[in-house]
Length: 286
Ligand SMILES: [Zn+2]
Ligand SMILES: [Zn+2]
Image (cartoon, rainbow, N blue to C red; front, side):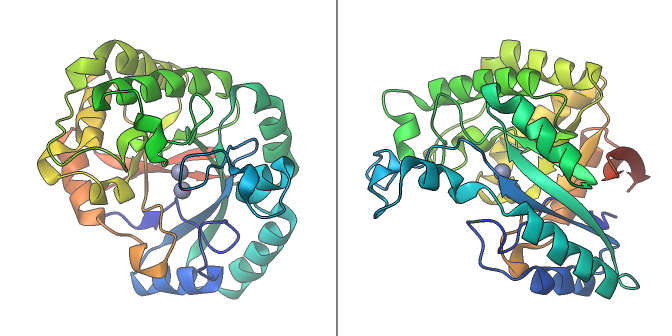
């Protein structure tokens, strides 16, 4: 049974309005033993408007202000987290985490950040490759879906290598086409095996975990889960360090699809999952 949700957000992340306390209370209601808040820290992130133009047009905001939109205010976040950790200490283990949106040239800044605060857990995310977040439909323009995924995986590999000292787990490896694949798109690992094998071997050799982001289950059809094929291959290559997180931005998404995740991981030969405390790895069987 999975009793830890270690990838979640609250209103300290730009894309969530949910108070941290409400998220924690939901986790307690779900019977979770461990809950980690991992707010967004996407330094240097480019933001585009809905027409796909870069976000200089966000009112009177400067380029710097727009870029800072997804950088959480760590001072306030860490302070609030410490208060709630104390308040709920008899009910749940509350861990302090951060989700870093990796950028190849900003590794030093991320390292300074993770040393400055007492984080238990750092998630490395490829939210942006080639200067654009695949969240925007423009990411696909001029590319087939297969080409877009390849482009994303190549970027993820570069980012994971550049930022490897920063993170403990690599988040949502199938993020690249979460939002804009067509209904009939079929993911076949073999199409990207050269890049993905290199990425998975890099994680295994460097003792980095791979995330099973259960939010991904909402974006692809059950029989066409990129994450399933990636996790299967990871296990086949000898990988065993998997972290599990709902990526909840609202209370209703806390611990979502955990039963499905456990079934999937077990069928891939993964016997449990990992938790990080004070950046140290702990393993837990299902
Ligand atoms: Zn993310
Ligand atoms: Zn997230």
